[in-house]
Length: 114
Image (cartoon, rainbow, N blue to C red; front, side):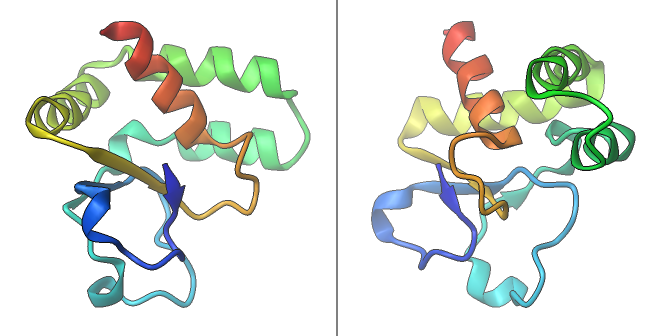
């Protein structure tokens, strides 16, 4: 995992942006993405509830994991799994919060699936 604003590295392997919104001030050329996987990011409604302090972190995690069970999310998760079977994968996020963001939840979810 790393912030999308960090410089891409050859060591990143496949680079997947897992945010629903494109990061501000970053060109798509400089992002160096393998793919932008919007469907594995939290829904707009869930994202707004978290950022509006309508729900706490634990409730967000539970709701986000439930969203990851959906068919569309599972298809994009398979893209990540296939890339991981071939080498390193880096999940990219825009948040300044490096410990509590959707990418950390997604990483933990994927690790539990293996």
